Every structure is written in structure tokens, then in C-alpha cells.
Length: 170
Figure 1 (cartoon, rainbow, N blue to C red):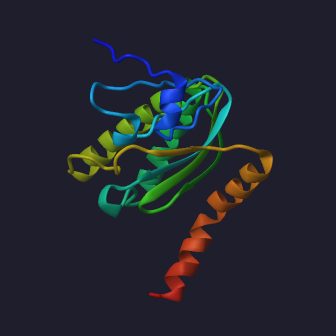
Figure 2 (figure 1 turned 180 degrees about the vertical axis):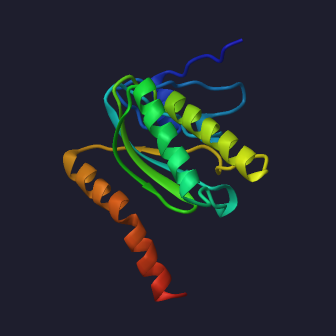
């Protein structure tokens, strides 16, 4: 049985912003929107800042072969799902992506990417279980100015991290 959809004012009362774009508002019996995961908003042409983190800050890439495999899969699924990748940064224990989804399919694209890479990583390194921490993070990018700042941040992330490491503990 499918949960009954919430009327927009009810979603607003639970602190969920209403977007005039494709979104799903639903309530499971006894569980309000504030009690679980935030809704994923996907719409055609959306641009997102995506973060993928290693489980318990675990390493995602042990060597260049791992990074190469991730990038191969990123390129393969980018074509398959018609996703535009504007920027990316592979850090040791996390990934930043700036992507546009003309077909409103971010979830399917990232599910495929993370599943394929996790399977590869676990088989190659004799491990099992989760590689990434929960769901990916995805924040919609609004406006050209923010997009430009975000692209700079993603590209310079290794520099910022190195500066913090060089500074030592606070």
C-alpha cells in the first residue's frame, strides 16, 4: 500500500521547503517528514554539488588504479545517464562532483556509480561491506556566481586540505 501524498501546506509545516520543481512529498503512517531522511529533489537541468565519503572516514582510493577505475566508471555512467560532469575532485577518503542532470536522474546515476565502484574495491582489496558513508550528499546549485565559487572550491580542495594538514592541530 502506497503512503498518501501530503498536501503542500503539510510539507511546509514540517519545515520542508516547497519547490516548484519535481519533488515527492509523502508520509509513512506515524512518521513525519522531520523524522527521517530529507527528500531528494531531482528535476531536469538541475546542477548539484555531490559528496561521497568513505565509511567511518575510511579510504576510498588506495592507489592510482583505484582512482582510474572510479574515473572509468564515472565516464561510462556519465554517458549512459546523460549526466554532465563540470568538476570533480578525488581525495583519499571523499569525492566532490559538480554535475548537471538533464534527465532528473541523479539518484540512479550515483547508485550505479557507487555500487559498481564498491564492488570493484571490495573484490580487489579482499574486503566486504559498505565502502561509503550512508547516502551521498547532494546540494542543488542555484545561480552562476555560486556555481563558479563551487567549481573553484572543488578544484582547489586538495590545496585547502594540504594547508590545513600543514597547519597542524588547532
